[in-house]
Image (cartoon, rainbow, N blue to C red):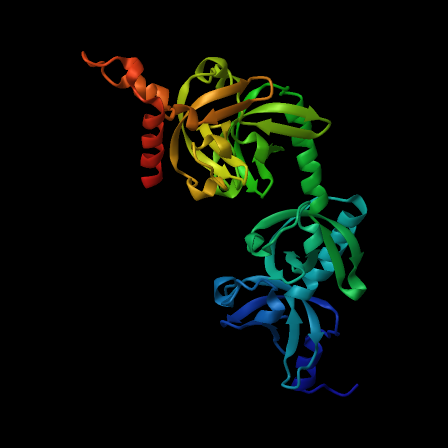
Length: 390
């Protein structure tokens, strides 16, 4: 056997490696974008930042790895053209994690991961270097207008589709959210009943009402139940986060109807006394129609001032003499407690027109003349002439 040269013996002392093989080595140098690994081969292994991790927050490898550290990596290319071996920690982690994700998929295991990227169609989370996509429709059980609220947050989900060959791994958070809400609703319904007064926080305000978080489950506060008075726009009264005191008006299966119209605050409780026929009241013109004006006497108590009862003279429509927000004084001329209807009259407070007979009666008696001698017809003529001048 011929003797081997030094170079040949040195070559024989190094192990052989192949693409796809897993190797272990010691870090001999670290730069911001590159790690140099002694893997016991004739050439050192190189791990770039992109092959170290998928985490976008890792921008400087010197903050993650130190000289002397031991690392495992997968061989991507034995010779990169410059005599170096290209390695990847990221791909090794992905392969190993693929088995974990497959088991999680089969067992419907709940996983927790950080949202690494917000996309147009959903969220991208990373589980040990493996990306899982959660479509927007599977992020929550309700429509999410802005997915950016989940950026950089840890969320829980389950795997509903697993196809690593096509790099298609789909996550589902909606199912967990719905299940959690169902549990909280069940617990809440076991502890409340109709008529209970509770506190909650406004979660969302719509044109028809507001959803109130009662401690994990939501109740609906309809616009008609927000006040004894008239509410035109809930968004002018409430905003998300507001604390409210409500009572449970109705529980129907899993739906909870709430109200702020507390019975003891009903403005009609003593209405028969306050708004008895003949009483003179003050109120504010709330709205108008062609046939009359509705006057607010108190929150939840509106009365009708018919156009014919606004003045003695003929008025075409209320807006000719009144305006919304104007305070008026009027007399109660009709009250119906059962139907909650009150009729007002301003005209009833005005002094009646004087008749000729009344004027004659006000003329003082003269010692030399008898009241009977007064020319009633002449007085009437004079009054008519006076009114025409006015």
